[in-house]
Length: 87
Image 1 (cartoon, helix red, strand yellow):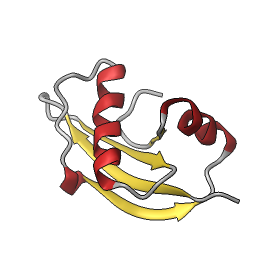
Image 2 (image 1 turned 60 degrees about the vertical axis):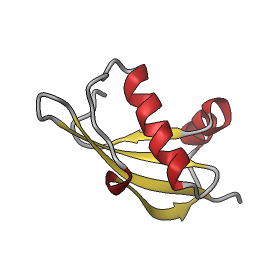
Image 3 (image 1 turned 90 degrees about the horizontal axis):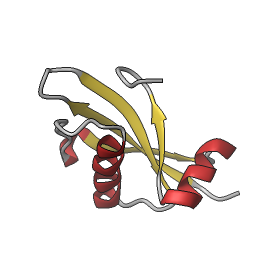
């Protein structure tokens, strides 16, 4: 059983919309979590969102579900969408 590390993340768009999501990594690396959050936001077309290290904090470690494990294996991180994210 390999552990994944969950970073609770909030981003705010220029329009004031809050996006809440988890960044899941294979290693406990806060800088990588923040960078991964920014890359993901850009990849979904949210170019004006602000996310800072204070809004991307380690939460806990757990075994990632298969779908998130696939994301981590293919792109280096997984995203679990919570509030304010397009489904």
